[in-house]
Amino acid sequence: MSQGVGIVGLYVRDQDEALKFYVEKLGFRVHTDSRNGDYRWLTVQHPDQPSFQLGLYKPGPPVLDAATAQTLSEIVAKGAMPPLVLVVDDCRVAYKRMHAAGVEFTQEPVTRYGSTDASFRDPSGNGWKLIEARKGAA
Amino acid sequence: MTGHTSQDPELLRRLLRAKDRMDVASHEEWPVERLARVSRVSKAHFARSFKDAFGVPPHRYLLTRRIERARTLLRDTELSITDIAFQTGWKSLGTFGRIFRDITGESPGQLRTREKATPHELDRVPACYLSAAHRPNLINAVSEKRRREAKVKNKATR
Image (cartoon, rainbow over all chains, first blue to last red; front, top):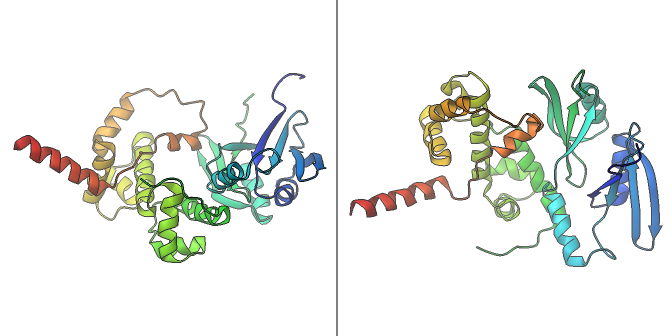
């Protein structure tokens, strides 16, 4: 596939902390980590999804002014950013592994409507749903 | 209405933890002391900061979550209304019915009948996010609403 969405970014409060979280606790890989002064372009990738990058950006200068950056930091910390979904083969197995790694779960795995899901947050406050892929779904 | 007050993101992240805990266990009792402990702030500081951050006082937020949960159970299960009341954290069926009506404008039984008769087209939304779409928008305190309605009634009869 050569067309489609390539990068979607998240705002995080600390890029080092986010990097550690997404790589060490969730098993993502670093795709690009490039700095220019205060600016740092950081993206990670799910090992099964080579065509998609998740950007981990800190709101701030030089891209944003201090007041805008403060507002965005507050929104992220309140958990008000849009929901994210991480699809896994087995929700309970993934939960066990991630929980043991110290991921902050906000909901333990629950099976409902024929699927199992759990919820967790990254250190910044971004909320993820951990959803089990439906068997036989495309 | 006061304007936006800037809050420390680090504090907000801890307040979010208390909100998350209410979300996942809204049937439990959540006195301010317990919530403040989760957020690692004083009781007085907690109540004020929570309202600044999320727009409603913590107790009112809890009520919206309980009503939301009750609505889901009314719609998706065959549980009796009594069972639903107790499962969602109410100590009395009467209080549940009254607050439910105050917030949604209909009784639990009416809502169930109506919801079951209406086909839904939300199959493509992950089920776990659906409940949020049905969250009641509780801007005014339930007691305020009741007072306002009483006033209107009084005027009408005058």
